[in-house]
Image (cartoon, rainbow, N blue to C red; front, side, top):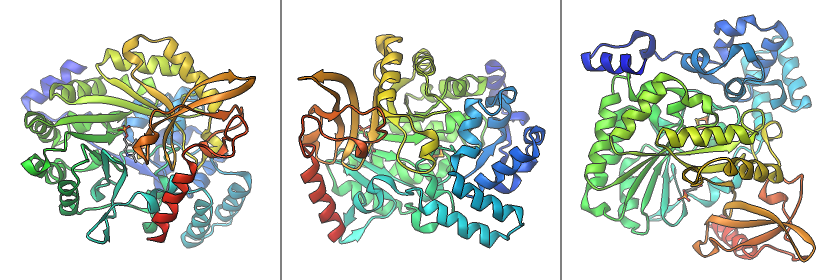
Length: 456
Ligand SMILES: *Cc1c(COP(=O)(O)O)cnc(C)c1O
Ligand code: SF4
C-alpha cells in the first residue's frame, strides 16, 4: 500500500479513494452509515450530547481508525463520538427533554451555552494571564507564558480535521466568539518576535494549524528567515493531522508545497519540530500515516509526540508502552504524557493523579531507554507544567514528589516539592502541601502575579 501511494505520486495521479475529505458534524450525525446500525436510543443520546459538546469526524477516521465491531468501547470511537456519560445526568435530562419535544435551534443553543459555561471553558487562566502586550496593546491570538516559547493561534487554523471528545480547547469550537483566541495578524507576530530576544521557540497551535493551506504557513513562517529573527531557533507545529488526516502530507493538493517549506526552513538553519498528538497506537497503523511520517522525516523535521492520559481511551500501561515503542520504531521521539485538564467532560475522562503516575511508571518500565525521553504525567496548570515524579514516604508521611517542568517563573523549574498523597486528587488544585505546611513554595509569588495581571 505504501509503495502504491508513492508510485501514484510520482506519476502525479490523484488517489481517488484518499483525496476527498468528507466530514460529518452534529447535523449530519445520522448520515454516517455505521451509525445507522445503532439503536434509536443510542442515536438519540449522541444527538443530545453533540448539541452541547463539539462533534466533527471525517471519513478516514470512521472507515480506517474505528473498529465498528467493538462499539462503544473502541478507543477511537470514544475519542471522536459523543458518549452519554459526557454530560451529568441533570444536564443530559434537560437537553434530552428539549430534543424530545422538538424545540427549535435557538432554544437548544441557549441551553447548550448555559451548560457549556459550567464546564470551565477556559482552564488555568489562559485568557487573562498569558496574553502578551506590545505598545500598550493586548496581542490576541498569542500566549507568552514561559520565557522561551511563544504560542501563536493562527485564525485559519482554529478548527481540526476531526474533534477529540476530551479536548480542552473545546470552547473554541462551539461557536462562542468570546471564548476564542485567534489571530490573523502575521505582522504583529513578527514584530513581537523581533522585539523579544529571549524567545527561542515559536509554537503554532490551534485547533490544528495543519488545516491551513500551505500558502498561509508560508506567510507566517518565511519572514522568520530574516536575520532579525536569529534568536528564534525552533519552529514547532502542534498538530493531530497525522492521526486524523495524514493525506495532508501525501495526497492533498498542497502536500508537496508544505514539505518544501519545511525543507527551506531547515536549510536556513531553523529546527522544525512537529509536535504530533497520538492517543492510541491504532492511529499510527495505517499505510497512509506511515507514508506521511516517512515524507515528513525526509525533510529533516523531527517529530515529537504528546498525548493526555484519558479514561476510556488510553488508561492502560500496555497501551502507552505500545504507543511509545511503535513511535521509536517509526523514528518519532516521545515527549509528553499530560494529565487531562480540568475542563469539559472531565468527570468522564479524568484519571486520578495516583493512578496516572502508576500507568506512567509501569509503561516506562516496559520500554527501552530511547522511549524514556517522555516526561509526565504533567499538568499544564496556572503556575506551570507540574510533573508527578513519584510517590514515596518521608518521615512517616506518604507524599507525591512533584517538580515544575516549566514555570511562570523560570526559577521554580526543577525544584522538588511535596504534596500529601491523595488517591482521589485529579488536578494540582486538589493537592495539599505535605508536612503540615500551609502553602506550596511558589504560591505567594503566583498569587501576586495573578493580581498584577488582572489589575492591568
Ligand atoms: C507546554 C507549553 C510550552 C512549551 O513548553 P516546553 O517545555 O518547552 O515543551 C509553551 N507554552 C505553553 C503555554 C505550554 O503549555
Ligand atoms: S486535534 Fe487537538 S485541538 Fe483539535 S480537538 Fe483534538 S485535542 Fe483539540
